[in-house]
Structure formats: structure tokens, C-alpha cells
Length: 130
Image 1 (cartoon, rainbow, N blue to C red):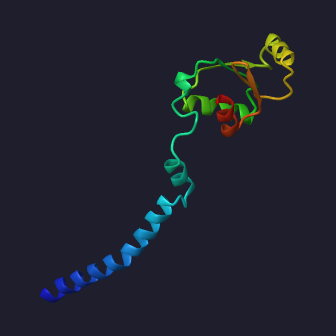
Image 2: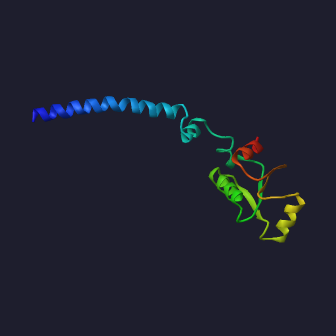
Image 3: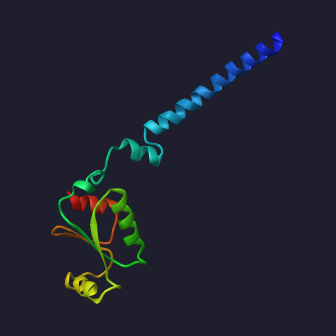
């Protein structure tokens, strides 16, 4: 019985020695931003995080139901707690007329105060907020 406990103690010590370098490599890669999720976590908050609820300018979006970029914008606004008004240009002739009056040539057309953005990417929306 004593031999078995010595065997397991030695085996455990060897496993610990093999495990530490692997742990160090994983932790270093996380700290140095080797993984995209780690880069996002360590890069700090974006310009929009937490600002959706404090944004004073109204956010207006002209969109359609089927547009994938409109869907991305909706999800982004919800995730960052932006209150916005959405006008579906296919649901109403008035919405389409207003969209055309703004010289819209594609959806989504996003208005933040007096600034406008055609299409949607999180980076360009954050730049629009500045």
C-alpha cells in the first residue's frame, strides 16, 4: 500500500511539472491578446459601451425587415442600450418618402442628431458618436 501511495505522489508531482508550462503559455497568450475574446476584454470599453443610455441625440434608423445590416444594427443598439426609432421603408409609403427625401440609397440609413451614416458597422457607428 505504501508503494502505491508513493507511486501516485510521484506521478502527481510529474504531472504538475508538465502542467505548469502549458498553463503559463495559455495565460500569456490571454494577457498578450493572442485570442480575439481576450483582446476585446483587455482593450477596455468601446466608445459606445454604456453610452447608449446617456446619448442625448436621437438615433433614427430607416430599415427593412430582411436586411442583414439592419439586423446587426438592431442587435447592437439593444446590446448597448441605445434607444432608437426605426422606420421600415417597405411598411409605409410615408417612411419611404421620408427616406428618399434624405437621399437614402440603401438601408440602413442611421441618423444621430444632424449626422448620418449609410450602412452599419460598429466601428463607423462609434466614430459617428464622437
